[in-house]
Image (cartoon, rainbow, N blue to C red; front, side, top):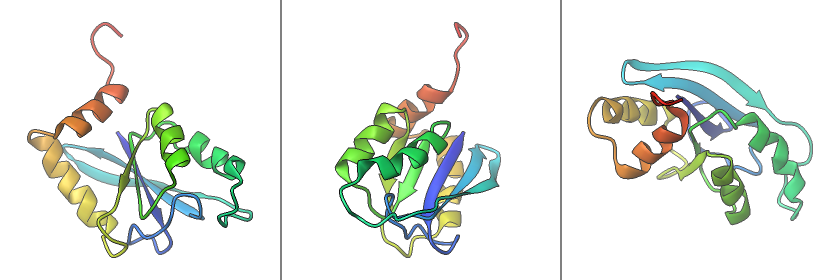
Length: 129
């Protein structure tokens, strides 16, 4: 599954979803994780009430299961969820992407919490599919 992180330094989860110029995307499984790409966004991303500016981000993240953010507005979070992407707020802006990925790998090997099982079901095809 793909996991995304809003970041300004490619180390920490330290960018607000709406203002993020870069979002790093990783592939993760119970075997480990691998960096895939950095999504880059241009233009005026300041908070201004213009909801259309997040549309390119929503479209770019549609194949991700989870996006970790430093902060996110309510309408942006709702729009992500509607697209099947679960937004998760980082514990702090000093939380490192690698730490979260390592914890997720361990969680996937064990017994994931209900919210993660639900997110996984959205992307994992079953036998009937």
